[in-house]
Length: 209
Image (cartoon, rainbow, N blue to C red; front, side, top):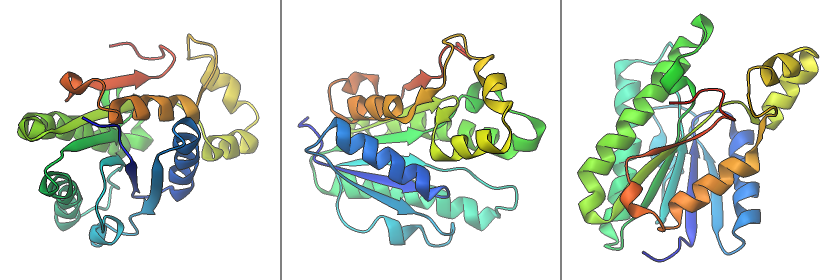
C-alpha cells in the first residue's frame, strides 16, 4: 500500500490535543496533510468526517452521561470512516488512540474513561477482522501519560503531580507527544499491514502486558 498522503484526526473533546498531535505528525512526515477535527456532540459526528481521506486517527471517550443513542452515534462515526476508505477501492488505515487504562484500569473517578478506551480496543480488533480483506487495516496505540499542554497545565496546578507521575514510570520520564505521532505514522504507513488489529503500548513500561 502506498504511503498515506492524508490523515484525518478525529477528537471528541480536547481539541488542543488533536492540534498538538497534528503538528507532531506534520513535523515527522512533511508530505502528509493532517486535519484536526472536534466532535462537539455524539449527535453530530458526520460534520467532522466530510470528504475523502486515506487514514483515520481517532481519539474518543464516552462520558458517564452518554445515552444509548450517543453510543450508536459513536459507532456510526467508525462505520462511516470504514465506508469512506472502502469506497475508494484503495484501502487505508485506521489508527485509534486508546489508553493504558484500557488494559490496567484507572481510578474510580475515571471509570468511564477506562471503560470507553477498553471499548476502543475491542472495536479495533473487530474492524481488523471485518475489513482487512478489503485493504482497510485497523490499529490502536495505547499511551500512558503524554506530555501535552493539558498535562503541563495540570502540573502547574499541582507542583507535586509531575514527580508522582514520573515515579510510576520505569523509563523515568513522561512520553512526549512526538513519540505517539511516530507510532501513528508508522502504523499508517502501510509497512506493517499484517499487524492489523494490534495495539502498540507507549507508556515507558508503566504497564507491561
